[in-house]
Length: 126
Image 1 (cartoon, rainbow, N blue to C red):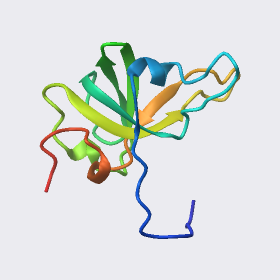
Image 2: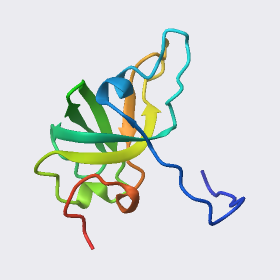
Image 3: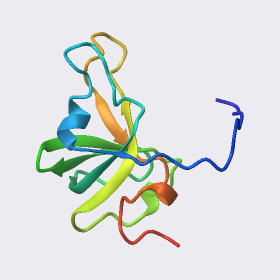
Image 4: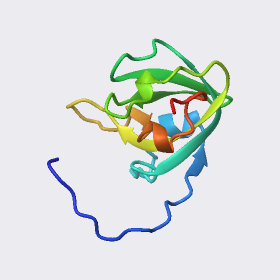
């Protein structure tokens, strides 16, 4: 992408849909729809495991429903924040990374858009 167009300004950001890790992992439904892909969502009371990325990379989130992947894009600055030390909430958009061969029915990840609008990671930089 080399640019964008602003069609309006001052509109309120929609409230994120509260879902679980199970919902992220199972974003492809039996009726062949993906109603939450590209949707702003919130996961509450998650913990993380794996290696905190130094630039871009995935970590595993866990909540009472199971596990899912949080993909941290190195352009957001989140990777520079101190990783959370306990349960936290995170807001992001569900995306899919399914590689290049069908079926495209798995590979869903939560991607926080930036540190400024994510509740990920207490102790953010000023």
